[in-house]
Amino acid sequence: MNEGTVFATFVVVFREALEAGLIIGIILTVLARLKAHHYFSGVALSSLTALFLSFFIGGWLSSMADNAQDRAKEIIEGVISLAAAGVLTYMFFWMEAQARRIRPEIESKIETALSQKDYFAMVSLPFFAVFREGAETVLFLKAVAIQSGGAVSWIGGVTGLLAATVITGFIFFGGRRVPLKPLFRWTGFFILIIAAGLLAYGIHELEEAKWVPQFIYPLYNINHILNEKEGVGSFLKALFGYNANPSLTEVIVYWSYLIVTYVLVIQQERQAFKKG
Image 1: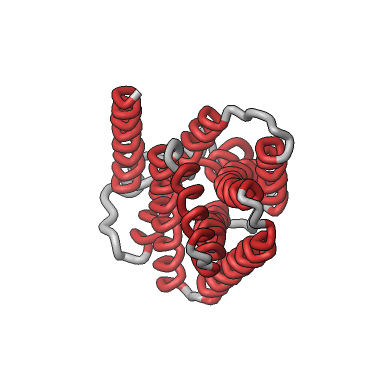
Image 2 (image 1 turned 120 degrees about the horizontal axis):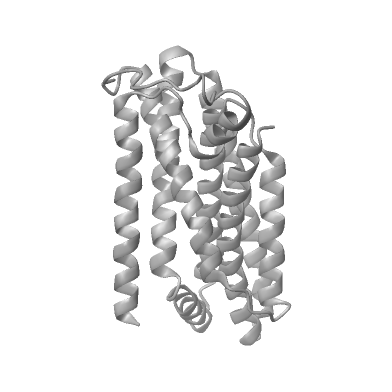
């Protein structure tokens, strides 16, 4: 298994599982504080159902991509890669914007559901939280497997899940303060670079399928210096979408994405600073 695939899988699974764990932890904390322990089983069942549904979607995606042939396969793989890049980007900026408000919003929703004895609202909140994170994860895992030309890294996924579980346990059961902001920030930066690689790879596949015009291919070829199919080059390809012989279109898309996201991050930082 390529080390780049393992690390990329670890980062995203860790991030997604931590987000879902924090939301479930907040829900259970509010229920415990309001002595509504009888809802615990409903929260657990809805979370497990969402997790199962996410795995089902992942299996369907894999089957669809693996059974497709030639041009259809290139189109499907390109679309999956572009979708994964879009979802990862949205996830980063959504979490950056919602980090401060997510806890009071969840607590308010739970308290409202309890006061109205709305069981559906109570179980739907953890369901959609877990399903959103799970669906994002399986989409990403398939995109990375496509990009690296290999299988999903179970080592990276399981390790990321365990790490997120441990940190969540420290916060809600161990009563420890964990510096989540820098943790989310640094994993977020890795995610944006991973998303840039997935975006460029998606464009490459759609170029092959003649859905996107291919300009100046290859723009350069440095495989003789850093081969993308072996050693460090293979690691960088799996992790960041490194391509030793890209087209001009891929290069423009890759760097335009990184520049635009960098500008958006700076703007978001300035707005957060002004708000105090």
